[in-house]
Length: 261
Image 1 (tube, helix red, strand yellow):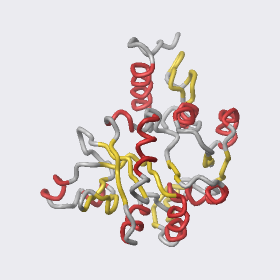
Image 2 (cartoon, helix red, strand yellow):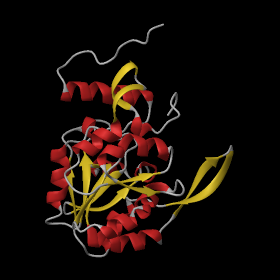
Image 3 (cartoon, helix red, strand yellow):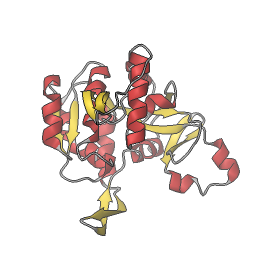
């Protein structure tokens, strides 16, 4: 993130002298909100900082050896998933701070009827979000903006639910399809040390289509609103998340203190 060299999941939800300094790291709030049960954090960038900030939560740390996508992060957590006994798994992100526990619970409840459940939302502006394609109200696949933007006008208008990047899966199904996910890498161009190189990445989104094509049941639940699933990727979105957190968890009022000069 511009202006910040650390791991963005450790940015504060309660700012002090600037949006980048304060209390309650985003990731710590996410961990507090999640339903009870064993938890794991996949670490890579600034992993020592992440571990230091979350020691009190008694989580398992899974090291992602290289930045190879959301699916790569999931694959790095396989040993954790194999070691727990719970039959339902939530996959969330450490930079999406405003999801309510009630929403996570809806994902888990959805797994009573489905093998995989997507958290969706209905944005005011479809922008560049991944779209959830449905067939008879079941998610068929998740389509990146760069692909669905080429759809016909009619088909684009039919897309009403978009992917929040948070999921629930039956654990046995997830482990089975992680093997299949590992066989479906994407070649992605990335900048590394000033050079453009091709690397292999894995996407959690692919699991939805893999499960559906195998004849298993997929489902979705909707977030309350777009703000609930907002990610923190820019200084502007950080400020908005801090303001929204302040309004929803505390009494309304100004959120920021101006930095002293």
